[in-house]
Length: 422
Image (tube, rainbow, N blue to C red; front, side, top):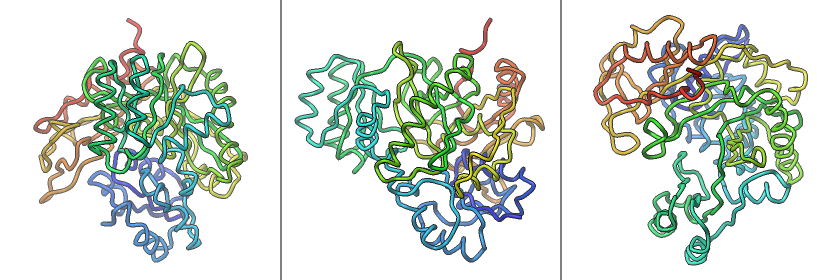
């Protein structure tokens, strides 16, 4: 029986805890720092996900058999390297391998060197050279901060003026801090977006069920970019043949490329894809489970997640048969008033006990104040439901969302709508 530690505090981590809890081989689950939702099914620890030495000490003291890292920041900081140096088993890529997300420049240069399909781009350290390059391009233009920016460091500018403003914000005003010391400027790919994640032990690559997420805050993909406002799985336009094609042309070549560069890649490799007229192309690689995709994917997983993760860690992934349920899943984020801008916290949440028993409510920004569950972040909850198809899952999700209330709550009403044939 295993003791498992999940690092992180979002709905993604709540979904991971929830899924691992279903394993017959899991004895105890800890979450650091966790949230109000995770506290109902795991022991939460008041340690931040970036307090790596403290987390390693806890893993040793509590005899943790496997640590699972949710967010990208501790991975980029080298938590896997620290844990492994202590003889601790941990699921995720090393600091060097996590560069595939932590540095847009590194990722783009890797793709170009190994002919992995992606947008045409150039990277710059000089603001003046970047500015001159932007002026020579035809909009729309994509401007990306090199480093981690909580999912908000990518600006799609539909005019040259907006691209120049974005560039100035990133490189001169340092709106994303050191993440904007370098930038990547690339062509804007056109097509349908899809996320395809894969488990890999550095040799074997096994794709997960595909999913689609929604980055803009408003219905119809309007408003500011967010960390994600909802997701659904599977997308009808991205079948098994396309999954296999992306595995062969993108996922496996990326894992091999990392090995060639001296970085064995283990954990989850996330490919954000655009299905262009020329075929699937990579918009970005991430080094961990996606949020909100995880909340729509894990309910469909029909294989013990602990077995998969342990196989990834010990290099035996090829021995595991990973199965997915045929049902669809839709997840919708409930956000605080004002998000993704300024918002208040500490607002009581009502109706959590009113949802149907087969509907999943994954907590993100929540905490308990005087026995009452309150908001504690911008993205507060993910409400997810399964159904025989996307339409059925959508109906169940939105029927239940109406039962949950808190002042300022807002959410998109079109998650999965494009999959429903009227």
